Length: 170
Image 1 (cartoon, rainbow, N blue to C red):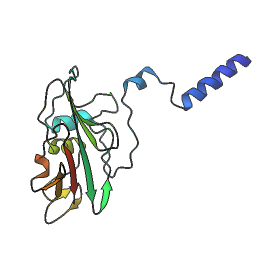
Image 2 (image 1 turned 90 degrees about the vertical axis):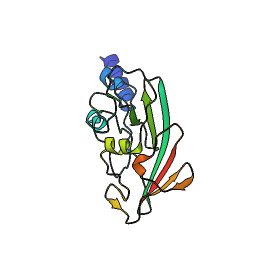
Image 3 (image 1 turned 60 degrees about the horizontal axis):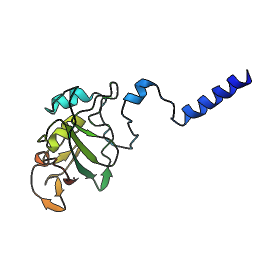
Image 4 (image 1 turned 180 degrees about the horizontal axis):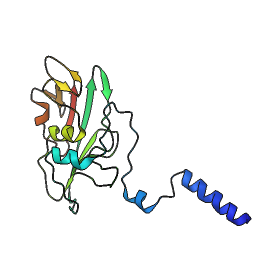
């Protein structure tokens, strides 16, 4: 009886520190809790379809490219949340996704994809226009710093090529 109690205590301790997972939990990507103004949606397939991204369950992910995105709204940094493009119910991952609260945007596909910033925002469910990010708007325009240089362009047209560094401010 004492040995069963010890085993139960050990199993409880292991589970409490996250070392014991069910097979379903092991298959699902970890979604980090971010203090983000705009949270990632839970239905990634719908967002990916709306963003005109390929939805292939058996896709090889031999192509990989990372970009970075920072957003400043009314002088405050806004967190790009973990889990954009990740279906929390099934574990399915879109070719365009985030896997942390660090602003890294990942493209993972079987072949190179020409992906633009509007597609990430469409998948995310956050408005992006020449003058607005979400509910934050500016009469002049969204300020864009692309790879360290200020540029004038529609923010949605920015290509998410490998190594692209994007800062948006409104």
